[in-house]
Length: 309
Image (cartoon, rainbow, N blue to C red; front, side, top):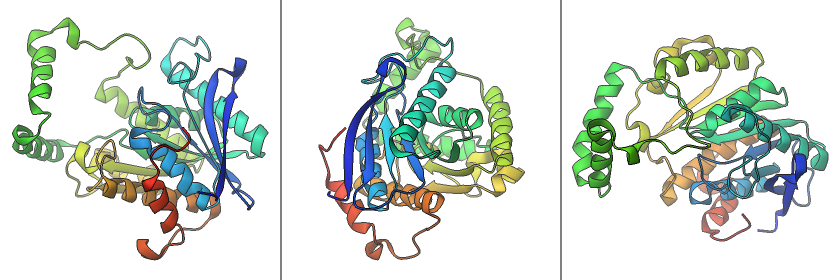
């Protein structure tokens, strides 16, 4: 793809962090850049290299991006010795914004986060006013009783025919019946967990603060992880909260949690790039996917296997 330039970077205190800066070629970049980082312990490229593909699609639409590893993950060295994971992640994201600001002169950012990265993105948005938009995939969910029962039933009916069922069943027995040492969480970067009640309080307070600051928010939920959704079910009791009225919510039945399928990747790239382009450029595609201006970029990104990390 020749619509972009890609530059590897080391940045942050002591050049501890490693990332890849992708900038549109031959045009003035949008005044807002996109940040992408790890999903759990995954490398900065994301599951199935989805962050690389998204960076290419965004560049074709005129949006710069920086994908990078948080301190102590992937290629990045530990950034600091802050006592908790959340603070360390926020420091890494702020260092990425500092680097993009120095390189591109951009002071506004949209953060794209997946799974465990959602909490890091939300915390950074609260701590730093440079974050003006958040695209959050499979983060916090608060399904209520009907949704939980339906999800349990669907999974129970599907599980015995799934090839992963024996392994998952054995791990469940280890965790819940045998209390095996091997089934406990490994110590390190991704151990810290809170109860659902604590998460709900934190989510509510944080979303209220972001709503008051007018941070644009996109919530995406996969069909494989959440199985069913009728009325913004993943927001549960929060579906009627004032902050919920201003965000973009989408349940993506054909997309799985790690975007394995080609169709799922296409839908994900289109949904996120459309939304980011609207936040960064003030434009949203209003045409069928096959004829959209960036359709070629999506197809090229989907066919890219071993592009720059």
